[in-house]
Length: 137
Image (cartoon, rainbow, N blue to C red; front, top):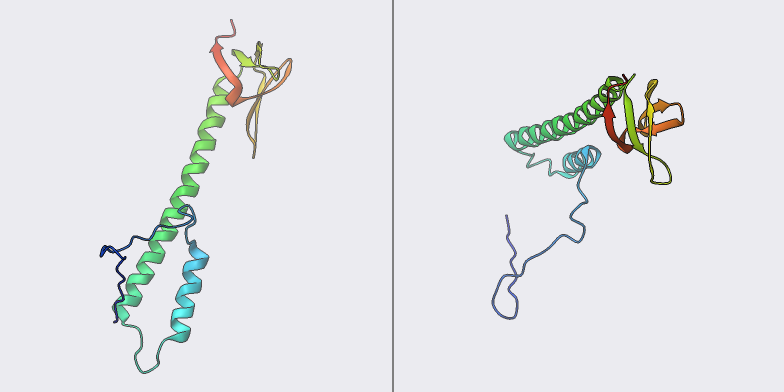
């Protein structure tokens, strides 16, 4: 394997910074790279099986981390729904659309992609707009 290094005019090794650090490779990118590697490998010098197994292990790790992230998002949404359900029958204070505080009793809860919504007599209130909760007595 050939290593190429460059020195700056002052003799120091230059550093390379990512132009877009938030850009990451996903599962599909990994699979495309793996297929390209297999397609263009030298048939007289096939990839070492231990390297191939290491790459497969990395792919499994990427898949596991992605699955964990999906599960965590679902749990977070489930927690919001549970909080909303716990407010049924309770008096809430919330930020009205004009920013002023308003209050009402929660009669029901609905969940959609946009988040959890509480229904009060005055209309729908997003869970994130709730400022306070008290018993409905």
